[in-house]
Image 1 (cartoon, rainbow, N blue to C red):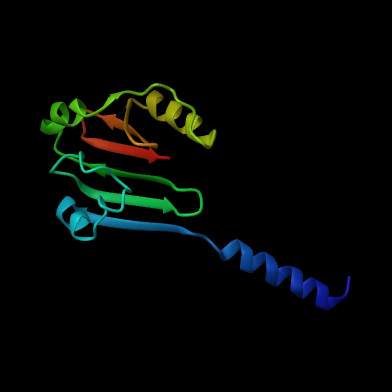
Image 2 (cartoon, helix red, strand yellow):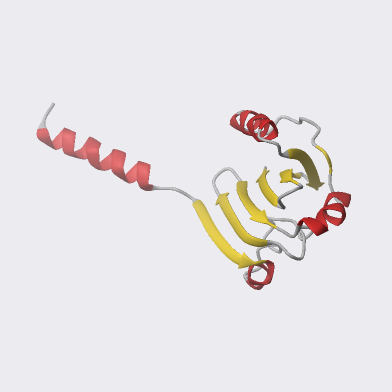
Length: 137
């Protein structure tokens, strides 16, 4: 191969590998997330507990999938779970989420889901610690 071709291929690999439409945000509190319109943009439903903090969202704009986590006061567990139903096992768009959900369940998280229109959130909840991991598709 000519040196020029090698340079072009390296440049193309770096350029394409560096292009990502994943946006990650961190919010110290729910109030800060609200001020940034996180809920209005649909990345998390507004039903998450009022005490939610340490909210991290990672949103893949190309395939419209979000994942993240947050913490909340475990005293709000009953109210939070009122809005959710047990996870149905509905296959997400990406099979890797099924493996991820199964792993979290093995680590003591309970799986719940919430649906709004065509959007599904799976919340993996550690009720004792008030820690939640989630995925949305």
